[in-house]
Image (cartoon, rainbow, N blue to C red; front, top):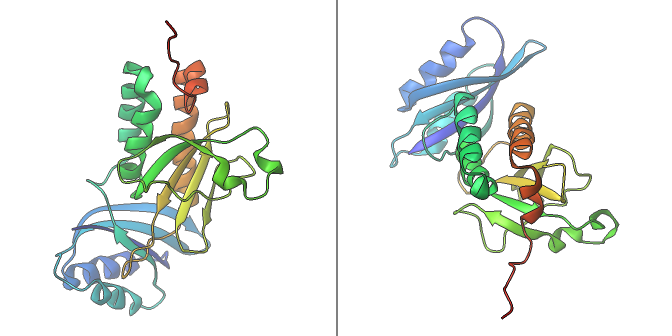
Length: 234
């Protein structure tokens, strides 16, 4: 199976090589490495690896944790092949080519782009912030194929791009479209024995850029998301 492995490690020569060797010894075949952050002598890296399905993931995590200075932030199942920002432009081109299904196209694509489990486009009522327990009042405009029904949505106020985690351990990235109360919610579920990492700032920024660009392309079509279907009266 395809796994995403996130580690925080000392940003010094040799440490990345130790992590790569440990992954190889454990049986993981590395297919991509993405540096999410380098700050204060530390780095946060995402490894996408092919992992033998019958092998114990705990062995992989223990091997990484044994490297001095290395912390395992998460190991979780990835959907599809690893992607880079090159796929973002292709996704936006698909939205522009078929704007009628633009929001649905975006919602279906983003879980694969950021190794998430599911995504929805939710419409938040105008008085969302003043309601108690307002998260249950959102209308689901579109949901990706793996989204639960109904999806458990976090409290998204204030409406701004950010990451958050529910008490149950589900990680969310929330990004508003900037009109019509429409919000993109992307989720990583907690699935034992795997534990996904929270959405990194880099991932939230990437989603926000996609949403902003998609909003420019789709314009007034966003106002129709979540609206009741129009029926003709004869």
